[in-house]
Image (cartoon, rainbow, N blue to C red; front, side):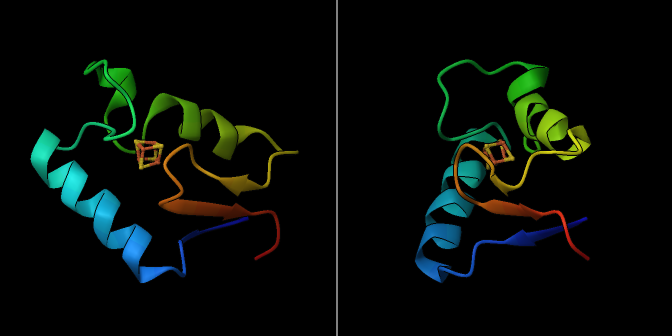
Length: 67
Ligand code: SF4
């Protein structure tokens, strides 16, 4: 399993700028709770899920099942 950043640098910049503005909360969500702090609960659960492969909600990270 491997987590990488999106290869699209424009997306990465947009999300990182959003995270800087929110103080680390997911820029794609309205609620600001411990669950929406990056890496958010949703993505942490997707990381734990042995069958999940794909992007986090914001597309900042990609989880690959292979190393
Ligand atoms: S892991 Fe992705 S979806 Fe979750 S808070 Fe970070 S950027 Fe947003």
